[in-house]
Length: 141
Image (cartoon, rainbow, N blue to C red):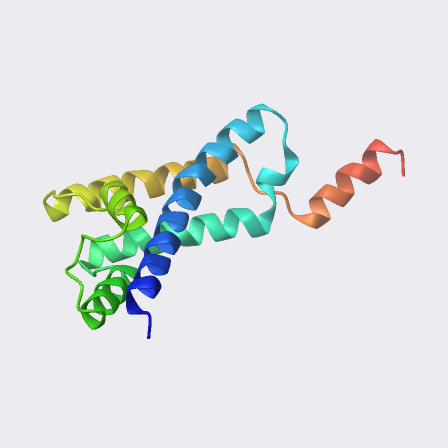
């Protein structure tokens, strides 16, 4: 079984989730400034809030990310040393993994999560019914 390839795929997925969490906040803020209605879609905002919620909860509980655990297990099965290998693996790991005391991650993830919650208040998600009511008021119905 191609464990090394699967480990690289998990690493790419992990990086994509990080991009979604960080990039999602940037999209919500700048998208609202630019008038992009889709950034307030309820499905997007719930997915984004859930993603950072899971990250912050893991940090508070001292839990290791299951994607990291899976990746390391796959690398061990491939008889590969962890955190060395392919080009993709090398660069994504440099972006994802840092050496810092656990409290630093708890603080950073918690502050980021609070910032995401603040965008819910400042840029509330759009509910379909509310959107339809606005459209109906705009057309004089």
